[in-house]
Amino acid sequence: MTRPVPRWIGVLAVTGGLLLGVPLLGLLLRVPWSQVPALLAGSAARDALVLSLQTCLASTVLSLVLGLPVALVLSRLRGHWVAVGRVVATVPMVLPPVVAGLALLVTLGRRGLVGQVLSLGGIEIGFTTAAVVIAQTFVAMPFLVVAVEGALRSIDPDAELMAATLGAGPSRVLWQVTLPALRPAIISGASLAAARALGEFGATITFAGSLQGTTRTLPLEIYLQREVDTDTALALAAVLIALAALLVLGTTLLNRGRTA
Image 1 (tube, rainbow, N blue to C red):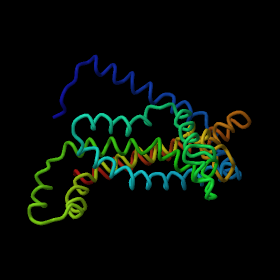
Image 2 (cartoon, rainbow, N blue to C red; image 1 turned 120 degrees about the vertical axis):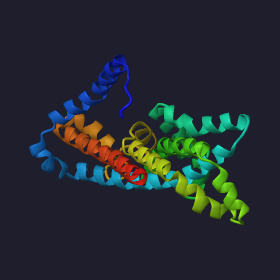
Image 3 (cartoon, rainbow, N blue to C red; image 1 turned 180 degrees about the horizontal axis):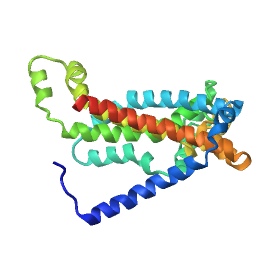
């Protein structure tokens, strides 16, 4: 039986749902659907879409490879180190994207703290495709860390302790006990990170620039097209919404399948 909620909560929920849904509906109603295939066939739109998919995949994998260890260590911290770790791990989530891009630029750019050392070895990161991936990872990985770290603190540690008591080493416990228990949180966190990376704009344009086929991702192309070709901008925006919706829907179905 469904648990009842106060009527005023229902009213606020409907208002909030309208605030979230009506703008998306308004955009979708403005899209010239009959022209979408032709609008997306242009080289600029095609390059932006392909680049966005490639960099989004790369940044999501990087977020998993680096974010999972961050979440694991963060969940084991105690005392004041917990606050320090959480600040470092979550501040990129709330920074204005342009500030995030500026931080990356003054650190990894040609004249940056680390970038100038890399430049001596012939390694240039700023205004390259690698810069896009780094920018997306910087702003997206915290979503994975927060999701997994919260799940780690809520799971029962007895299974891990029992496996260790039976002789399993730390790595075996991690792969066979901890990570399987975290699978729903990992899937949800990775989906959020991918969606955030797909929609990243400010950090990318500040750190990587806007070069067609190299750093101009879908959000950047939408921003440029809105001034010169509104129909193309709307078509690309519809694609971006569809991709984000598929990510969220896929995550929901995967987690529902595991809990059914």
